[in-house]
Image (tube, rainbow over all chains, first blue to last red; front, side):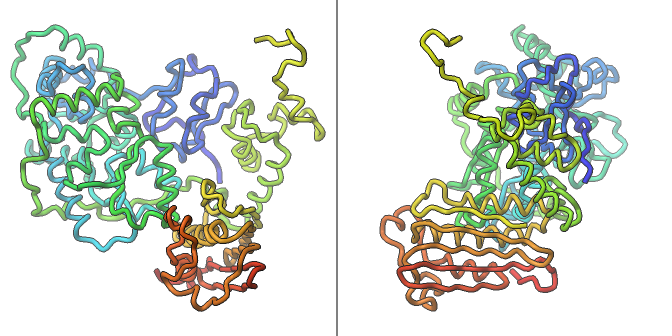
Length: 435
Length: 144
């Protein structure tokens, strides 16, 4: 199988800033990054858009394809749909309503949260969880990076994903239905992460007419928003047409879905590394007694998204303190059970080729044997100098024709080099140490 | 493709590592998700049996064009009555193991459920050899 090194749907690299330093390569959970010719590259079919690379880069070389605010505002038709995590980026004194108003002052003609779309989503998920005869735990599908991780690495768990259209898509659909088909308003999604930028660009289920016009990373418009909010008193042209739903704000954090569904307890896992561990257990049939897994690629959930600004734990504190102060309890409105079937995914998601070495089993076995042979010759210290995250990944790249064994800086030392000697770090005599 | 893993008895911290590794290899081969899930589940149970009951053991995996063939052999106490051991819920796990949440008597039945073929040989006080196969051929696939 040919690997394609292409830029992702939204992920882009600033080649001038990238120094080929391997930080991103080491944290990528699907080993999708290589350093070639001194710059980072992405194996696109493995990228799950978790944004770990963006967060790991010390030089801000990784970024997201964005739209300029000027362009968004110019036609006077832009409506912003705000991700729940967006509301908690501006400190503890800023109410969600005030954040919506700031978007209006910024030049959007409308600002909304997921609103009714979220209530429908919640009802559809509840309906699915209670009605079906399921094998193994159901896995929440609200984090698109987790969904992609399953598509790439744990395809046998695809049938465990909750088959409901995500809330941002339902929100877009409702908006269009209310506005009418001929409305020429432009919908923009204000996203806290790379994964939702991708997910809003390529809807899972709904027709093109419901599509977002674009996704705007929160980090890109943080400064103008912050300065509007810092100005204090204000006179917006008009207030937001809908009040933000405070009872649904917990969706910004891990555990929010469990709370919203009114489930006493479920398995809540945060951070892509821990999610990987849990999925590993689920795949081996070890979580049969767990009914529901709420998995988030980022620590704390969406507040920790790769395109947020505020410290996620501080943001979570602000969120929880806000709800506590106003005594916002669980959702007050009853679930809208009627017609939730329309919001099921029509067909299950497809696996992605992810890890497969070759489409032909015999060839794949041959390649795997060669990988083992080569791996035995490598030092096994995962130094990353060859541009691959591990010696094993390097062996794989050699077999796939994307690297040469000579790229290993230890290969030139020949068969008999002594690793312990090479890697000697202790000072031989007193005073020999550089440190 | 052949693989071999050493398993150490009582090492619960490393429990599952061999079967996770096998799973990863099968994904590299691009085997269908359902096959991988069944092999992984059965291999995990077999690995746990060695960890719970035996001193040490070996897991061998062989993949050819037709099936995944797993052999787990250990030097342990052996199974005096295999028929009894195959019953769901029957267990001889010591209390300290049960405290850890293992040894519920579902291991062998679970392997049988997931494999297309299973064979078990045991010698009391010497050890046990378990072998199971999962067919790659769609037609001979076991239903869920």
